[in-house]
Image (cartoon, rainbow, N blue to C red):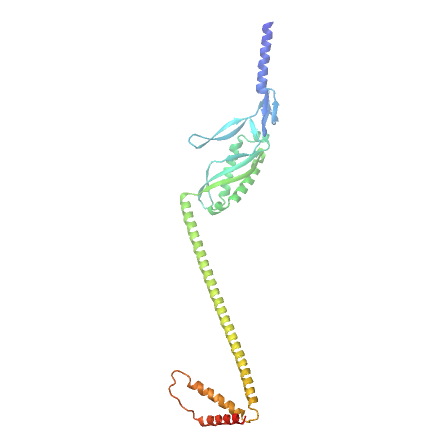
Length: 327
């Protein structure tokens, strides 16, 4: 009797241990587990504590490609079975592949793919190896897209290739329960001879642009210099014109003032000689004497001569003496 009880207790303990280890599943946040009952889909376990019936219910595993770096620094990929399906966004770094462009240039492209599983059941049952299928689909689609572009178009159309590749992959992987969020081309490496030719072309283009910029600079400098000289000449001409105008105006005003002064002087002389009857002779004599003074003025005038009309001026002087005597 005691042995039977011990047997039953041992059996119960074993069953309890098996149930706890096999029947109790703790699922982390943003992870799920697909459960099959007798080989048929039964349910999906969400995050938290979950219980299943051991042996009857079993988690369904899926193939998943893992990448790991070895001690030599190189990346090695391998495939393993896993029962936990991660619903977070996954970044998949595809190995570098050779692609031929439209103009028959072989280039090397490395791509990154960001995708997320939104339907775990489809990801398990609709495709055998989800990660491998996505990789092969991305490679073939990328070859088709690049094959429609020339090398120059490929190098400058990364955004266009990323958008088209993401759209095609998202539509194709939708039946697998996968959402492709983003595709990025990390780098595009053409052959060495093409790189050398491109570097020479870029150097020639830079030299051409530098020469154009230098010529444009010289042209603008010459234009600015000519405009400056033109403005300077105009300013000088305007200044000279203004100076001549002011000089002429000053000379005219001086003549006017001189004429007014002379008018005033003549008027006073006439007023002083009023009654004598010979003011005109007086004025003529005075002007004649001033002219003789101007003629004899100068360092090189060594000959003193008497003008032909000297007798006339002497008679005028006699007339002045008579006027002064009458006064």
